[in-house]
Every structure is written in structure tokens, then in C-alpha cells.
Image 1 (cartoon, rainbow, N blue to C red):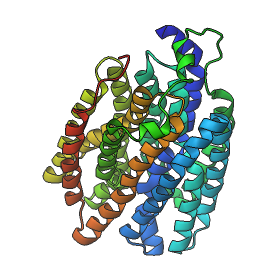
Image 2 (image 1 turned 60 degrees about the vertical axis):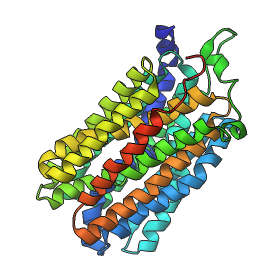
Image 3 (image 1 turned 180 degrees about the vertical axis):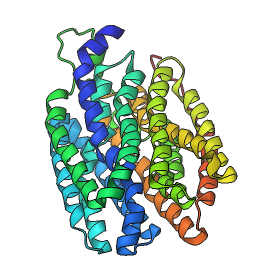
Image 4 (image 1 turned 180 degrees about the horizontal axis):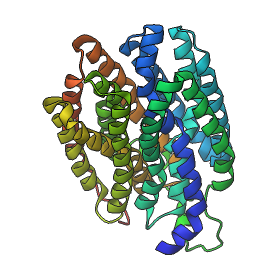
Length: 399
């Protein structure tokens, strides 16, 4: 069964890997910190004003996630993701035409968020969950590792590229990457396995599951939602702030990009390791342990300074490496796949609500204090309810 899952599902796994890597929540998100200083220098924007770009993006995604989830449940993954990727790419191409107007920045962010929701784990984790049962955690980890590839490659290579060629050239490169990837994703993805075997667990699971209305009436749903709200509120403003934080401390763009690349490696390792372990150990226990380590990493950087940046990079990468895999895993295990898009969509909306808050208050803290120490302390404190709630989650049915 384990070998057959990967033999049958490799194309979907590859398509999901590519789609997740070039999507809004990976490639664009991990490049956010690269534009902060160039935009400050060219346009005179404050970091809070720039941070509001991400707030607008995630607020739109909050509204779009349940809608896109229902579209996927009704029309399938392939058409929704293809249209989403093309629309999102078109908006990327418009960014180099910005002239210093904040309203233009916010309008473009609004536009690519509408299409970008269909390029996130909402679509691609549904595809992976449909093909994998025994190795679900590992398969999700493999697919989502592409985010770690981007978390490594974007700061490592895009930071010096932008320093030499300008930020506008960086957006053109991202547009071309998405454009080339779209047909590959479309032809590799499938909604469910093709089989006539009624005992095939992977095929049968796509026809069963809790309804959306029943799911949101459970305590478990809101416990899971609370976990990911605290996680996103804690760390998702620190990721784009990481490169400017290091540069503020005196590191060059290449040095800051190199340390941020370590975060990318941590994302990859975290996703594979978490995925492998949750197939074997009760996932909420793994969640509690992982985010305890995240709290310690934030404390190390906040209290010890830039000398501990490598530990914070590993911890923050591990946090990002765990969250989306776990949302998809918890959704499938607790609620099934028949209404996966709608249920995951609402959970993802809650998750990215925290992502709307985090960059705004993180940028404001820097504008007021000149550093991110308080933001790091807040992140560490928010890990406490994550650990406590994780330890109260119920066992999976058919575990």
C-alpha cells in the first residue's frame, strides 16, 4: 500500500509541489522582505505602510478562501488552479509600473490576492490528501517542501539579484516563473484516483466526510482554528521582517539573505520531518513539541540579539514548515474530504486573519522602537496557548 500510493500519486505530488512553490503563499511571501528597503528608499514609505500591503492581501484571502474552497468542491482542482495562477501572474507583471502611489500598491495587492487564493494549500493539499492515506503526512510534507525551496532560493538569490538589477526586475522574474509553471501544474493535477476498486481507501475517502455545517458546530473545529490563529498572529509578520532585521543590525544584503536561506532550509526539513512523524505519532502532540521549540527560538533572538539569528531562523522556518501541512492534515483526519474545500477554506481564513494582523503590528513596533524585540517576545508568548490547546485535541476516528 505504501509503495502503491507514491507510484500512483507521484504526478499529483509533483504538480502540487510546483504549484505550491510558485504560489502567493510561497514565492511572493518569502520575497516580501526584499522589497522593504528599496521601496523605503525610492518612495519614502514607512514599514507600517508597506506592512499594510500584506494586511490587505490576507484580508482579501480571508474572504476568498471559503469561496475558492467551494469552487474546488464543485468544479475541481485543475480549472480553479489554472485560472488562479494566470490571474495572479498578470498582477505580478503590473508591480514594476508602480510610481510611488500607496493606493496603487494596495490595489495591486488586492488584485493578486483574489487570484492568489487558488494557488495556496487550499487547492493542492486537497489533491494530495485524495491520493494518500497511509503516507498522508509525509506526502503533504513533500508537496509543501516547495515552500521551503522558495524560502531558501528567494532570499539567497533574489536578494543580491535585486540589489544589482533593481526590484522591478525581481517582479518580472517572478512573473515568468509562474507563467512557465502553470501548464505543468494543470496537466499533472488530478482530483482523485481513477480506480474501480471499492476497497481502495484513497478513492473511497473522497466520497465521505463531515458536512461544512456539522464541522463548524464541533468544538474540535474551533480548537484547530484557534491553534492556527495564534501561530499566524505570532510568526507571519516576523518572516518578511527577518531580512531587514538583520540588515538593521549591520549585515550586508548577501549576509542577510544567507541567514534567511537557512530559514528556507528549516522550512524544508520541518515539513518533511513533521510529515513523517505525524504518520506515526499523534499529530497534536507533535504540534505541541514543535511550537515549544519555536517559542525558544524567538526568545533567543529577542533577548540575545543577532548573534542568535541562526537559531531564530531555524525556529521560524520550522514554524512555517509545520503550519500548512498540519491544517491540511487536521482537516482531512477530523472532517474527511467530501467537503474539504469549504472546511479547509474557513480554517485557512482564520489562519490568514492572524497573518493580516501580524505584519501590521510588527511594522508598527519597528516604527516606534526601531527594533523587533517586542514582536519576538509576543511571538514566544503566543506559543503558550498553541501548546495547551494542542494537548486537548481528541483522537482521530479510525486512528
